[in-house]
Length: 120
Length: 114
Image (cartoon, rainbow over all chains, first blue to last red; front, side, top):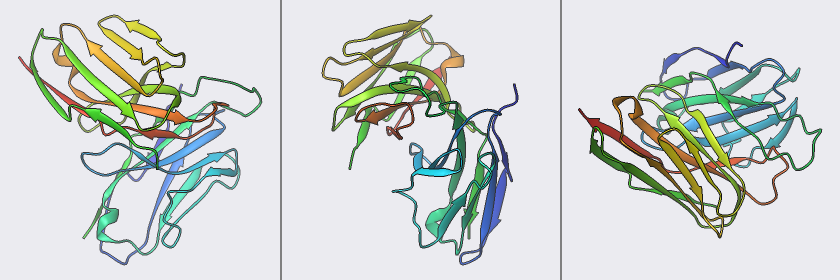
C-alpha cells in the first residue's frame, strides 16, 4: 500500500515569510497528525485530526500556525509569519483508528518522509 | 505537562554487544509505543505495550513495560549495523480509546562501531 505522502521535501524561507506543507495520509486512515521535530529531539505533536475534526491542538502556536483537513483526507499546515525557531522537520502521520470501537488499544502511526524547513 | 525522558541520550557500542535504552514518564501511561528513526529518515513503528509488566520480543529486540506503567525499556541483543538509529518511546496518558495523543520521549541515538 502507498505510504503517507508529504510535499515539499525541503523548503528554505526567510523569517517573516509564509510557508505551507501538504500531507496525504494512507487511504482509509481516519486520524492524521502533524508533528514538529527539532534536530536532536523527539517529535512534538502540533495538531491531531480525526476525519475533519480537531482532536488536539494544545501545542499548536495558533498565533502563527494553522492547519486544516477540510474533506477528511489530505491536510495542509501553514506557518505565517515564520520565525527562526520554526526551523525543523515537519512530520505528518496517520493511523487507522476511526472512533467506532471503544477501548481500542492499537494506534500504530505511519509517518511520512517529512518536510525539512529552514528559516533564515 | 507530561514528560517522557529517555536514557542514555547517546550510546556507542561495538557490533555484537548488547544495547538497552530506558524510558521514564512523570505520569502513568495507558500504553507505550516504540519507534525507530534511521538517520535522515522518519519514525517507524516497532511495537506497542499495554499491560502492566508486559514483555514482548521481536527477534533480537525485547520490550518491557514496567509494573507501575511509568517506565519501559528496549533491549537489543548482539547489535548489528542495521540497528543504527534513534529509538523513541512514545506514551499515551490517561484512558486509551485509540486516538489519544502520543508524547514522544527524548530518544536514544545508537551508533555501532564495526
